[in-house]
Image (cartoon, rainbow, N blue to C red):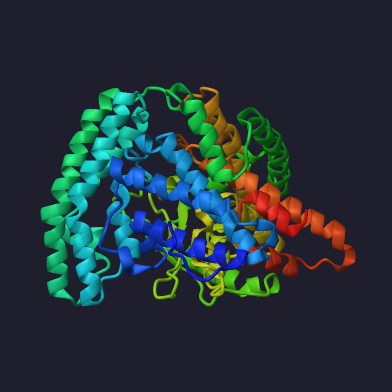
Amino acid sequence: MQRERGPAMSDTERAHDLAARFWDELLEDAPMLSTVVGDERFDDRLPDLSETGRARRATRMRAALDELATIDRTRLDRDARTTLDVLEAVAAREVAEIEHRVDFLQVVSHLWGPAQLLAEIGAYQRADTPERLERLLARLHAAPVFYAAAADVAREGQGAGVTAPRVVVERTVAQVERLLATPVEDSPALLPVPADDDDGRDRVAEAVRTSVTPALGDYLEAVRAYLPSATETIGLSALPGGEAMYAAEMLAFTTLRLDAGEVHELGLADLEQIQEERRRSASALGHPDARTAIAALEANGRNKARSREELIRLAEAQVAKSWEAAPAYFGRMPSANCEVRAVEAFREKDMPFAFYNPPSHDGSRPGVYYVNAYDLEHRPLHHLATTTYHESNPGHHLQTALEQEMGDRPALRRFGGYLAGASFSEGWGLYSERLADEMGLLEDEAERLGMLDAQGMRAARLVVDTGIHAFGWTRERAIALLEEVGVPHVDAVIETDRYITMPGQALSYKIGQFEIERQRAEAERREGAGFSLREFHDRLLELGTLPLPALRRELGA
């Protein structure tokens, strides 16, 4: 992180110089992140999970924090000031996760573990030129070192008594088995190669056969050997150092120092309010309560997609509709809408109902809204609309694509804000679900009930996540609460296992939504009859993804 001496710089220049160097080092240490944002410099590499790599990351992060401390932040303009807010949060988060050895649990995970590598390569990497193809091949040939290092970290965690819960390990084993059973010609690793490049596809297939498959098989055997030491409990508090690890993860994801007990009670109070809204919605549908209303929707036979293709068509229509409606509520729009795709078969059983992947910085790769077509029989369609508006417009796609198109911003701000914590981006997604109702995007009361079901699920997350990781809840208790607020059983199981393997992440949604709603209410109070919702949205999104304390300061509320 040291910079060669040169002409004296102002504090603002120093801030931007530090941010540029920090971003480059961050991408070098996280080459898959580099690929995700469309920076191809490190497309031939995989993350270094070894002790050496971990020490290098910690040294770089601490050096950045030390240099940041020498800059007088009171003399900075807003852009430089908020850039350092993001840098500080990212670096502090990285240091905390290294110190608490969060990697012990990350290397055995069905959501963000090594088994996701090929799916990420397939979704983000390009191999449409000779140079890009060579980088892809180099990355695939690096798989043996990557998977061996992951297995070493898992074994180190075993020795420290910090292991993943049995349910997570079993899901990881099953996911890797499905991936290994996938024919090489159907491997996600071939997706970046053009269909008419026979030689390129043959070379990638050979790399999968000779480098990836054997390494993935060795990793699978290591995880199978790890299984007997998996915990029967599911929460962090049962692990050595688990309480401190959970506190660090709550801060990492929400950007706030929170007390688990207070968050738990906040969730219960919000859930009670939403349950009353659900009862009113059910009454509008002619039923005494939400459970009865949902049962009636299921009984009419029209509340489920009959095929993967139908689900995608419905989602595409909703995305198009939201794009057309958005300019009335936003003065600035992204240059392009997002695409809709189905989650790949090898991982659909473990993935949530939907998620969003951002576009590349140059627009060559679109933003993608993924919809999960697994077990459609038990996934009611009245939930689809609010999910679409959360993931596409006015939710994640609109917010993320706009941020990436702010070309005058440092790359750290355009692409790395979410690394400082998820509360702004996920809070925006959740705020967007209710905003979609204001925009008239929900077609009927059934879709409004679906929106309230989704809001209730996020309130329940505050209860369930803290229940699991601070108060010793069982998996069955967590699933039962989610089902009580209208989450279908198949999703309640997937969601619960997600909270188990991603401690603290589920808190970011409601914590962020509460903050955005508070900022809007304060702006309405301050501006009175002159308040413009469109201008408020533009002002908020123009700031970009920030830690919540910085957002409060910049909005002055």
